[in-house]
Amino acid sequence: MRILCGAMLSLAALSLASSALAQVPEQPVLLDEIVLPTELMLDGVPFGGISGLDYDAANDIFYAISDDRAQNGPARFYTIRLMLDGGEITGLDVVSTHELLDVEGQSFAAAAIDPESIRFAADTGTIFWTSEGNAEGAPEIFEADLDGNVVRTFAVPTAYIPDADGKGIHGNLAFESLSLSLDGTSVLVGTENGLMQDGGKATLEAGSPARIAVFDKESGELTAEYIYQTDPIRVPASEEPNYNDNGLSEFLVLDEDRIIAVERTFASGYGNEIAFYIVTFDGAEAVTGLETISGRDVRPMDKQHWFTIGEGDFGLDIDNIESITLGPVIDGDRTLMIASDNNFNRAGQFTQFVLLAAPGL
Image (cartoon, rainbow, N blue to C red):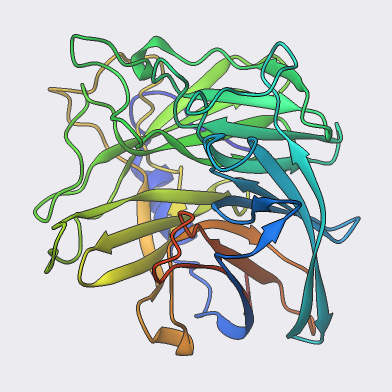
């Protein structure tokens, strides 16, 4: 992955960035979806909370992580296989369930972990996964084997660690996103909203300066940080509990310069709206190692709207989409698989896997 460091790029580089950014694919086409009820139980444990998803093409397996905080069952990830007939989903098989263990090889205590995203590294045969917060509220990045044992943890910069002085992540708005560079050298994570010292949470009037951090996969060292400016919250809440939000719920590395970013808006009385963007590192100002960007005029990553899924769009009853991965090639087109986190809420939410063809991606 080409990570651009330094304060700003030349006008020529910015021109090239604009050219690269213009390469937004045509709108995807819905192939099919499969919906699983929140009541689904596997060996006495509810299936759900799918907050991260990744595809292992060599073995035709999806890795899916549950954001269960070890409260409905153990912290866990699944391997899943889709049965396909062309672009039609004819079935879904949860092949296996694996407990995620702590650094001591023990089960996580209830509420001591908040798994959010997962990626499979074919070169090491391991998974990388993130937690939005441990018992002290600090976000974490893990590498684990396929039995859920921790191989190592990454040192999270102090700027992300919450303290009593108003520094660090906002609660439940931390490492929602994780992706690996295509060359296998970098691990990228993203906060859902900005750090407390960088700016406020997203509102109806303004977005939030989320951070995307890049780590060297071999050494675990931080190599770059950038600002991803989220959109404002798109709609006001219209009923109790009068809650709404917007944030970066996941991203996927597309090539050496671009990612697909997923922003999820929710408002009580309205529901969910999911916006997808093509985002480039080119032209973005690196903020590597800065404790705060307050008072700085930082150039964030450039993003261009690709498509949005609101209620009824693509013919979907869309839920709380929090994950995205490339899927199998079908009829010559790359596909995207997105999935929803049902929050283990039996009052109207469900687990949804949606398969989209992405011509030209």
